[in-house]
Amino acid sequence: MDQIIRVNRFVGVSYTKGKIAFGYKKAIVPYELGVHGEQAYHVDMDDLRILIDRHPNYLSYYNKRIHMTRAYWGKNNIEVGLYWLMQDGHLTLYRKRQLVQFIWSGPVWGPNHPEWK
Image (cartoon, rainbow, N blue to C red):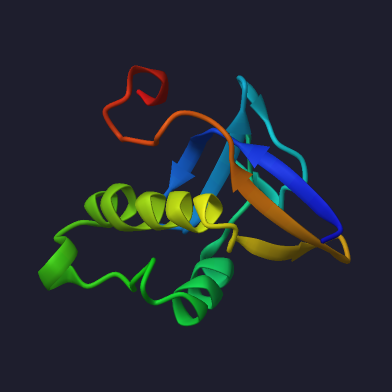
């Protein structure tokens, strides 16, 4: 593995555009893909498609009948799935010609945790 990046929170998400940013200890982690508004992001819709196809037990495509809204899908499928991929050591993506592994390093993730509101 070229780089291992610690993550302990999700920040600046846009589920409609599929852009999700990772943070660690109140800072944005390195190896971002770009900027959405004023927020750097680390995963985009192309990455999500790859990860969904590669890890269908962790993530699923948006389905209006099941997920109702993209916000519900994002919080209850994408964030949960990304969290578990990081916990299990499976969230690896190429960034700047390097294989980067994002790993979760913090308390158990939950959308209602005070640090993530």
